[in-house]
Amino acid sequence: MRFSTFSKPFAGALAALLVSGVATAQVCPGDDVYEPNDDCASATPLAVGALSNLAMIAGTNASNVPDFYSYTMANGEAIVIDVLFLHANGDIDLRLYSDAACTVQIDTAGSVSDNEQVDYTNNTGGPLTVTLKVFPWNVPVCNDYSINLTSTPPPVNCPGADAFEPNDTCAAPSVLPVGLTPLLNINSMSDPDFWSYTIQNNESLTVDVLFSHAGGDIDARLWGDNTCSTLLTSSSTTTDDEQLVYVNTSGAAITAVLEVYPSNVSACNEYNLQVTSLITPCLSTPDDAYEPNDDCSQAIALAPGTYNGLEVFKNVSDDFFTISVPDGGNLTVDVLFLTVNGDIDCYLYDPSTLGTTCGDKANYLDNGFTGSDNEQMTWTNSTGSTQTYYIQVNLWDNAGNEDCNNYDLVLTVDTPTVGTVMCVGDGTDGACPCGNESALGAGEGCKNSLGFGSILSASGSTSVAADDIAFTVTQARANQPGMLVQGSTLIATPFKDGLLCMGNPTERVEVVFMDANGEGTTVTSIVTNGAVSAGMTRWYQMWSRDPGGVSPCGTGSNFSNGLEVIYTL
Image 1 (cartoon, one colour):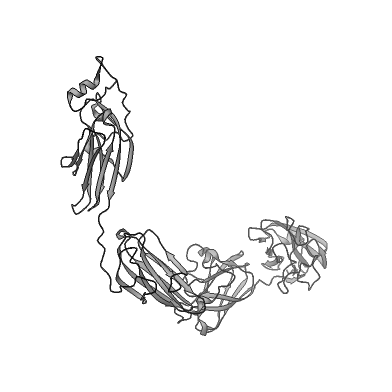
Image 2 (cartoon, one colour):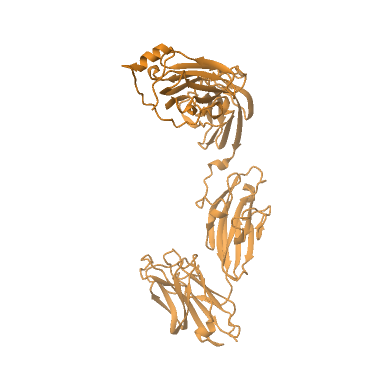
């Protein structure tokens, strides 16, 4: 058990402790969470504010005497440290040191009342770490205490007025030029700076307010009138610099007012203004419906066909599309435009470049970048399987002042001429079961739940001896099974969601499973499975599932177009 403290006058302490000849016991607090901080080297760091639940214990455990705390001051900063306790429970005194070894004493406090206080102002010319020693006047002592540290920041030496003063009101701004305006000053909330700038229609204005946040935080606002009542945009971060961007597509010029102001009453700082302007009619031109498709990862999948009214921008982004081409298929890409409105180029990429060189305008399969109207690219898929190719449409970077142009995109895929397409679902060979005819001339089956019909094509040859014919279906439902059906006669009968064109006798030739793109190809011998020989004519369709209760006619399956094959030796 530790006993209550002796006061500084020994006789007074003795009288306090002796009651009827017996010492009065006192319960000491336990060690606080900042132990061990019993010497200068292990001082606990302080912050501005209060630190409570501290314990001063001195007696049999002398290692707990005294406590040390440190605080790093900025040059010019003034601090006051109060240590709060009840003197009746044990007297506590203070010393403040300015060196790491706690040998240079800069203040002390040793009254015989509640609480002690030390203070110090750092005028060393740089940062300084001071150390506070909290110790009992004599032992044995046990008491609890708290610390409160207050700080007065160093005085701010504000810069003088810059050459554009007085520009302190919205009604009396200075004219803001394009480019860099350096050596500007802001001194207080009562001394903001105002700048006027006329933003033309179709002008994109960027204003950078350049400063060091450590010297005082600066914010900025852009107003749409000389009363500063209509806010166009603002910037108020807590880092270096602020940036404002405003695009005027109102149809008329706007005389705007830039306000540059400190974020608090006492802040002052130096800053520069950087103004960048871009004026182009393209700012008022809306982008097309396929945006965002600004890189290969955002490419929009298109089917063969014509796409009108597309838009490409030099200073915004290129356009990217994909198209699937079956093995042996010939792809033609036509980009139609008037070069007088901006020269457009185009590039075609292999699917293996996705995520690496796709879109770099260097590692392409084919390109079109003449200086005349329109561009064309062609490519034949000889990979042995269906491939997805990437198309990039780019407004040439050096195309004068033309910052945008519109174009039409025409995609043509000529499939290998094995077999003859027949029994299509566009209504020319008979009506589809529930009015679900596909696009006229698309060469597809009746529409499925994807909004278009599936397409059956063949590759290889019609030679029975070669036995290399393979059938491929595209535009079917992904991850679903299908059945290649062979007929010995030609019919056209509505059945399920499509047209059945295979007449008896029929053969179920092979089950084909569609991949994630809704595509699948036969892999077994069609000659063997279909029992065909040279001179025979046979008709083929892919019968595939369209489940989930969403097929157009609700039957859950559909047919591709038909394909007629005349077998040879």
